Length: 189
Image (cartoon, rainbow, N blue to C red):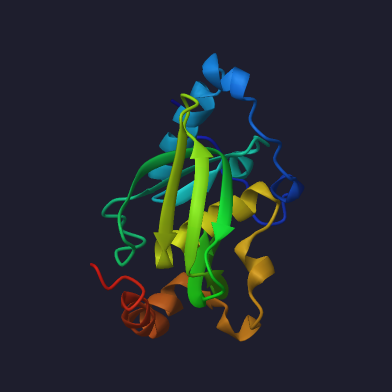
């Protein structure tokens, strides 16, 4: 496993649309090194997710995981999930305001409208199909990572630029109110 460089805002490779992963190549294990590097790089950077596009590989694969993440102590847990060719289907029209950051945009956060409820379908690295309904911050994490596969960054979705803040100022001035507000998105926790 290798910790790969994470591409940063301004790198044109971040704007490329990823191609679907070949299910036959998946069955032959051809993506395994990429998956291992994606997970290792995400964990090394304390990310909640990482798209292959962010490490310069333009194939539709994302890794997600939240487990006692020091950057996001308020996020619900997400077991390690490798999603190949993920498809997101909104459930209803309800959205929520999500303060987002990104490993490709270090030190900056901004408010993004995200769908509150999603059905997610994907293949795992062994070609098995999965389907899950996700809500709130977990739905936001899926949307954020899948945006990368379409060459989009969270900064593209910020409609009110006055919500941009540094990481330190988010923690100092906005995090407590944000956490209180998003707790309502996860009443079961």
